[in-house]
Length: 149
Image (cartoon, rainbow, N blue to C red; front, side, top):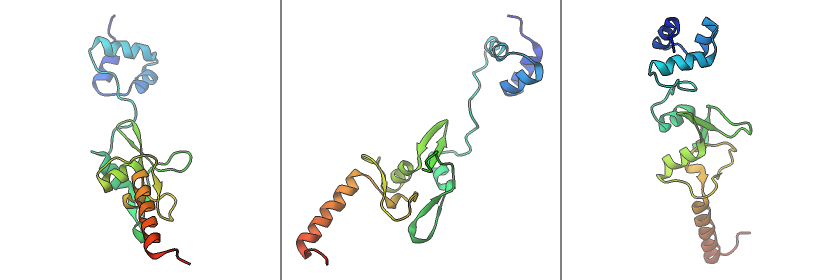
């Protein structure tokens, strides 16, 4: 394949493929073939990562409020649940917060254990293991002190 120098120059300059196609009025396949002939890697999809780690992304988008709660100011899914986008992956903010706070992966479904519906404070999140421990503690309390009226 004969390499078009104008495409090659733009590729070497880091110009996105879509811009090259618009600017030079060429098909995406033409730019792709040129990239392959030049031995250049495939373009990266999506925006560049702004954060060095998942933890940095969480800490940059969560803000403490009264009562020990954390408000998420980053993106959310269509149902309003907080989402974290990192290295082209969508992660659950709750799972990240839980792991950071408890130092382990959650077991089973995560739920918010406080009265703030979308709280992302790791200490306010409960997995199956925590819910079971709370039930055992409640049963022990009741057996010792009886029912509360």
